[in-house]
Length: 449
Image 1 (tube, rainbow, N blue to C red):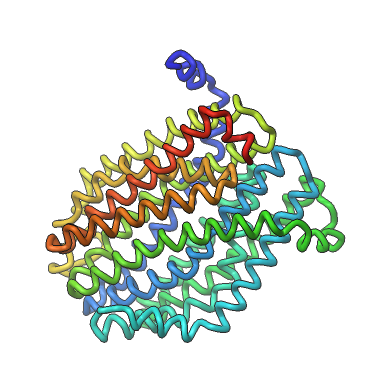
Image 2: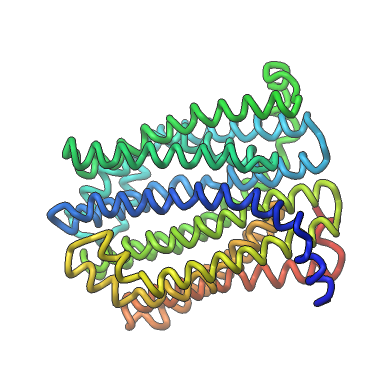
């Protein structure tokens, strides 16, 4: 086994394949937490902690709402990559059309019911009235980006599934740079405060949609796919697999967001300074997530293509090569937080009480990359193989472990929250690893797709 791994890792072409897919997504994903850091830094330098707490609460709630619908990207990536492996232009066209149809329907429902959704979400918060006020203001503006944001999920997933990493890279980078520029303009120049941060995100999402549609059109022509107008009937054909996969990943995302929402709400109950400090540290966690997601995306594309081609050897090469570079990335993030974590906190906020609180809980972030890398990589494997039911079941177990651990040690306050979060990320990886090893040994991983 060791000699086999050494042989795989000695293949220069494999490393090139992984990095060609992963590096563009890592570079683009870095701009996502950078956007969060700029949001926090711009708002964090205003006069009061409740502005930062409000943005943290509002942006978390809109993230919960959008991320619950993140199955659109994951399902699209897996199905597209498998169609690419099968070399089926008709299926490639079908997946994109089905994804866009589902995205637009969901966006319409979200806009129609966003007011009662906001009332329900914010009624559950124990935050101060000031934090809730600005959180609701942010949510009520940002929700209008739903059509663009959900369509961008599908576009990003489809482009990745076609093994095209450069177009998604520019899509994410340009969207987030637009957001950052407008953030600074609206908040610092126009003094729109929290509303400025929200409007910056809305306009950036629609900018990204226009660019994404251009990339899709170019790929459509390059792949020699059937004409769009003649392909519309495909959108309603064989929707069962898409809907089943989406429903499983939705339930998986629901469990994930339950944990992150609880983290924000429970931190808010501990005081404005604690919720503001957690907002700073959650920006670091997002840095881990989006950095590792670059390799998870590469895993999704490579695994999906291998599954579509029914190639066990191609699948093994993908797993080994991507895991190697994922480990390298996680070690670099750990070293970054260990050496410069305190400086990063002070870069984001100059409020002394918030700095002091963030410093206390920083050690939990230092260990996070090593613990969590496995869940990101294994997510990529199961997304590429479109095994939504396995992802759903393992996430449910990890969520139950999170809440059991927190309530067992709740007297530890915010330390209990962060300890439970670290264990939650670890359990996500353990659950998927057990399922994968079992299916791999029994020759069922590819055959059962």
